[in-house]
Length: 124
Image (cartoon, rainbow, N blue to C red; front, side, top):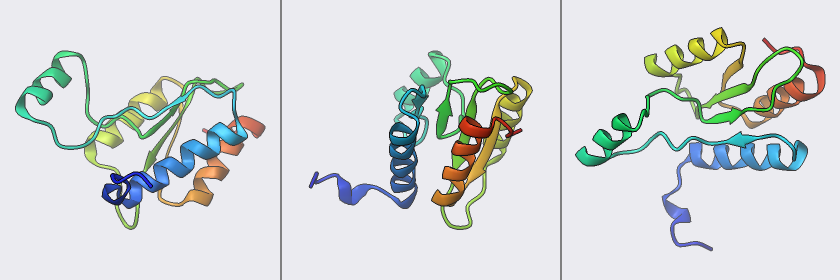
């Protein structure tokens, strides 16, 4: 086992499960996790903003459109955590661009959201 595994948190594990599920069940999906969290040095914060980074980008971005939406964005949380103000603002912005946007703290609910997006094309 990788020695860094012990440093991963619950949300990291949920993220990994969701990405692996998408890759397995929807192998043609263009999906990414934008590395947008964590502590940064003052230089890293400067560079992040200088290069156009913005706070609040959801954890899972699927750029593959369905019949009704331009993409699917899922913000992952664990336990009782909820999206921050920046995350809510970004999710609203994505909705205005005709994306299906959700936040989720349960793997089974994530699977349901993903499958509905790809198979039924009904998510808002």
